[in-house]
Image (cartoon, rainbow, N blue to C red; front, side):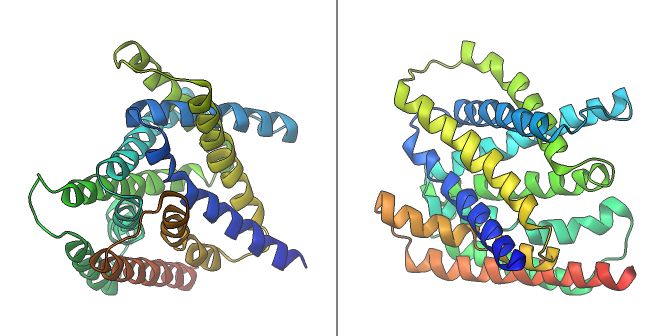
Length: 289
């Protein structure tokens, strides 16, 4: 029963992660302000969760606080690029081009930690690149799909680096604590932009931002962690690859946004490469233990 419940929690978390992409269409102002609202409400929600669980916020040194602050900057860039990709193109293009991150993570991990490169991951990287090429109809900056893919790949690249840098921190601190500090840092970094970017915000926008930060970020993050208690990391990684599938289905139902056949074919290749790279890296890590 606990295994089934955990599977449900992880699927629910991934569903919410996929839903987050739609906010890039529902909220019509700058991605910088969308991300500011997201991290502000997420940090409040995570602070409440940490207070309820009585988890300590103390870290080893001031150097660790600086590292978390810089990772918050990287998180900001990741989410800004993600929403920019969706706004200039479609939810499908944004989610699928971002989905290259597992391949990038598997490819860059040996460089970050001086581990041996899994040769098959080179093949998966080229396969992922092929999928991305298929998504793009014309390699011209005037083309919205091309610009969307570029922003999506930047989002995937920054997320891959963020994941690798978080690897060491996750050995000492819970992911909830790490997420809280990164969201808080991102909030502090982005607050000055409310005085630079002109915008109008109403009560509906505030509700959407609160849902994005509390439900689709802090809530989804908590559900995913909770589900991991009875689910293998490899299984969770495979389920996580369903994020663009959920997102594209929701965009079709709620935004009447149907992806082209070219986007679907390219996306399938990207997702297959990402899932294979994740399985390959996980299997290699288990063999080294």
